[in-house]
Amino acid sequence: MSASDGKEAYTEGLLFGWPAREELKRTGAMTFGFALFFLAVYGGASWVTGFYSGGLRVDLPIEQHIPFMPGWAAVYVSMDVLLLLSLFIFRTWRQMLPFALALCAETVLGALCFLVLPVEVAWPPRAVTGVWSSIFQAADTMNLERNYLPSLHVAFACTAALAYRERSGPVASTAFALWALAIAASTLLIHEHHLVDVVAGALLAWGTWRVVAPRVRKEAFLEAVRVEALCAREMYRFARRHPRYGLIALALYQQSLGRWRKARRARAGFCFLQGVDDVLDGDRPVKGEPLDAIDALLRTMETGAPGPASEFHDTAVSLGRVLLTELTDPTAREQVLELVRTMRRDRERVRDGHWWDAATLQTQLGNTFRLSVSLMLHVADAQVRAEDAPSLLAALGWCSVMRDLREDLAQGLFNVPADVAAEVRAQGHVPEDFDSLLTAQAGRAWVRGEYQRARALLDRSAKELAQLEGRQGVALLRLFHRSVEAFWARKLPSRMPFLREAPVLEIS
Image 1 (cartoon, rainbow, N blue to C red):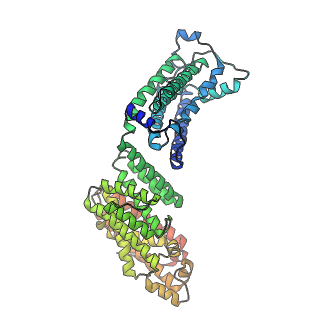
Image 2 (spheres, helix red, strand yellow):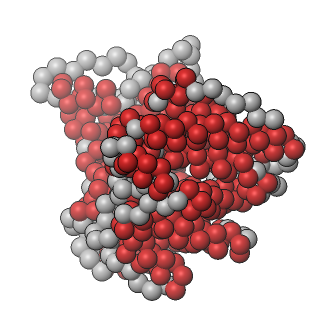
Image 3 (cartoon, rainbow, N blue to C red):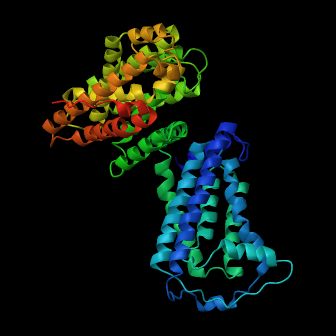
């Protein structure tokens, strides 16, 4: 965006305005996030340099003639007001982002200078009494200690003047420039900085704004930021619902370090598919029948047809398109939509209250985890396929059923075979109720049988994984295997103590 583009933005509306509610939430969050970031980096640099002994002397002889004028502390602290005006000048997150990232970059560069080039202040001790004492104390506290070269106070004020100028007319542009100049002068007149600090701060602002702003305003960069924000918001929602999703999110971000751009498809894919699953499970309310929301999503993804104006639809379409665009294998792209349709079948049986037989249940679980694991392995550039570990896929299906059995029954997702449910009813119990199911002899017998089946699956899975050793992607499969092993050995018996009495068969 050039200076002329900025002028066009100005002519389209007033310099100051009240942002839309949703945009104010975003720009306000950015402002709060920057404040925390600044306190951590700036305060951390001040703390570290506190262990230094001495520092550079950068004062000039001419500075001996600069008077100490504590009243200028009011101008010094006005920088916070100057920065907060950004909320009403940059009224969308896209407009605010270049400004916010420029300030972040200046904070980091400034902190590095503080650590590498510590400065020893040469001003004489200051004592203020009277009407200006409280304001001066606030200004002095704001500056902390030892963070002198460059002056970030000056850098931020000059950055604001440069950024606001692009959206201002001649009068407002001059006013912002004079305000920044007054703030720079105040750092000298209250003896917080030396001339070298001020000049360095102004140069830092000029250079950073010229480098950061044009790059951040590129549409590709803004879209990447939007996608990352959507992923972060979705992962936060998942983690609030259950801590295990928080662990998954941390693992995804940890695996993204060093390969952030390439790993974006993993983050977007997880958020897309988990969001779809949450809607179908009823964990994320949508207007109307969840199946209608998913059908509209599939139509938009496949044909580009417009869908309902809802947060879920807009978010899912954005993340789904990122996933499909960045999957290089056409088969993998087809598997994404096939997986959504497979998950959709579960919602259909909830709606219709169907009980499936054991074979149909196993087929549904097998398809779900075959597609899920295939996509994970593809995203991880693995050399193994889901079909190479069939026993592990079946074990994952078993774990999913037993882990969520109580919740699934409560919402009408019956993962208990129809013949078992009939036996439970014949014994005078209610198979739809978790506690009643496990009170019935038939219910307990089914759970014991599934527990033994899982042991056999895990033993066969261990052998299958051993044959795949050395191929890329096996570590991910072993992670799944260990997770199911831990659930089988510890978590499930603690939930269903009667399983501790069940003999464990040795599987050859």
